[in-house]
Length: 126
Length: 317
Image 1 (cartoon, each protein chain N blue to C red):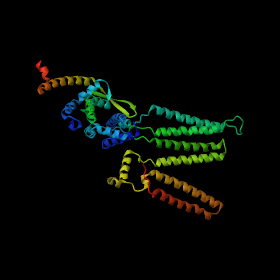
Image 2: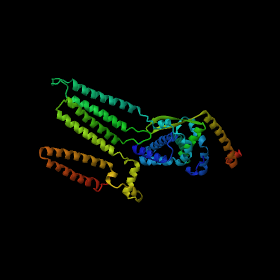
Image 3: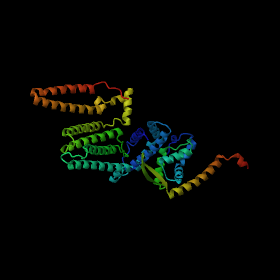
Image 4: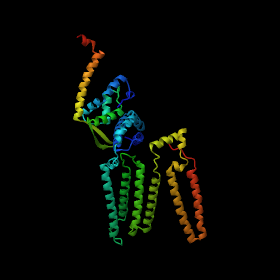
């Protein structure tokens, strides 16, 4: 799905990077336990400190994609006052994809750091 | 969460899903979104945001949901099998409600049975040490209350796809039924009356008429006029918003169906009285006089119309 740049509230470059990893970020929040939509959204929002936000509409697309690919599975929680909550649980395939994505991210991060020459000058001299 | 926020979420969701196919997958998505919105609204309300504003803000924050919905329509269309429809329209009652809905009718039925049994077994001549006749009245009261309560309770239950009935209206419906049943109960006591016979006939008659009037009035007034979109439209009318004006209904009875219901009930009462008095006059005074109450009733009805339909309306807050 093509994502809309205007969905992100601040610095477009950083937000773009963040949004490019929405799937992995959602998988990461689910590694700590089953969550429903708003909890996942809140975890991301709180971690980003309000500077960068992934809109809930984007997350709904992510849940559907992850579910279709078998990386998460959904189940309905008990009915509360506000209706039933749909919880997501990470599958073994989801964990494997998460681990692969994390190592890919680390490798890419190192390459980009090198290419953009962002190394701290003090460490380079040492 | 408050009722206002709940209603606003309902309306915004209904609008967002208005063009979407009504399949199980769509309904699931709507329910998932609803639960998430409710959680966000609770968070906002906790921070001191007003209910309607909290609902609107939560909804806006979701982002471009319509675009996602348009993308997902193909996936979510699917087949709408009877099994899907069953799952979608299924109502999952709350356990406490199920218990109330079971216990209260049983208590009511026991009270009715006890009342009948006492009336049948009572000795024909009063004996000292016999039960007070008030016991019958009490038992009838319990019977009418139990069924009235269950009615109000059931009507107020919320399902996941509809607006719940407002508490006032549900209680009104329950009271109407309770009064009606109490009236029927009082008439039923006539065949073995604990007090004077006429008392039960009068009380029963009053109960039945008042009960029917309450239920008829409330039934006629169920027109969605307190729903959020109607409130917004009324505000637009009172502001004199030009674009909203063409939709403004013409007369008072259309705008306020409760007034129309009251007019109907008043008219019915007026004619029942006129015909009764007319017959009495005919029998006891002379048939020439029987037409007089009819003339009076027509005059009163016309006055009623001018008072209720054409009188300038007060602005309601």
